[in-house]
Structure formats: structure tokens, C-alpha cells
Length: 188
Image (cartoon, one colour):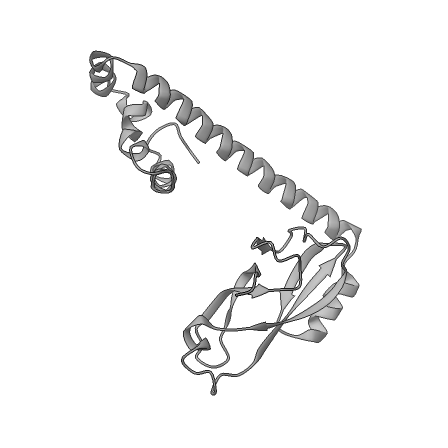
């Protein structure tokens, strides 16, 4: 079994055989670190620029229709280690590569910086929740009952006690769901 990196497509590409939406694909073009890449990410190769060809396979018909499936190709456009785009037409890919300029580079940098800031906020929020929950666990049962009875209970940690009692993956999913619903001060 080989190691691949996964490229997340900006927009799903329909499978040429069955029409199923393909949302990602694997590639061995980079350092094979089992990482997920999306447009705007910096690839880990020391220096790479150009258009790279990759085969695209649909999970639904990869094994089932091995003899019937059409070979689909996608073209990754890399500009100074930045994944600029993924295209199904090689001519379009070459045009995008040739047209890429420093202003586009600044846009990618700004988007990458914004994503980094978003992850930092999420980490700080999660760290804050865990710290507060630790304090909550140190409370006496009487203090916890008082906290639960408060009219602002949904804003306190008792509103997420059920989330944090789970394993870490389930806890994160629960916190994200509650944050999206606006149930508390924890917006991940």
C-alpha cells in the first residue's frame, strides 16, 4: 500500500463513467505525507512550478467497473509551490499557469493567512473551553447545581457538559454543532 496526499477539489467533478460527484483524489506528486491539500495550500516539495497530470477515479466505480470505467485526468497547477488550481482541461491549466501573477499570489497569501487566523481562534476557543471545564469539574456539587439553575445556564459550561464527557472526536463534533446553533459562548 502506497502513501498518497489527498487533494480536495474546490468543486466536485462528475465521474465520466457514472456521474457520481468526485470531491477529492489522491496523488503521489508531492512528498507523500498523507496530508490534505486544497487550492491555496503550499505543497511540501522543495521547489515545484508547472502543470502536473493526475488520474481521477470515482470510488463508486473504481473496483466495480474496472474494465468499463473511463480514464479521467485532472491537471494540478502549481506556482512556486502553491496549488493554484485543479482543472479538467490541460489547455485551461496551462493558461491559468501562464496568467498567474504576483497579485494572485498576494490573494492566496491573504486567504492562507485568514485560514490560519481562523484555526488559531478555534484552538484558543477550544483551549478556553477545556480550561473552564476543568474549573467546572473542580466545583462542588452544590456549585454545579447553582450553575445549572442559573438563567444563563446555556452560557455556562453546564450546557456543554454532555459534549465533554465524550471522547475527543465526539466532543469536538458536539461542540461544533452547539456552536453553530448558538448554544453557548463557544463558537468553534
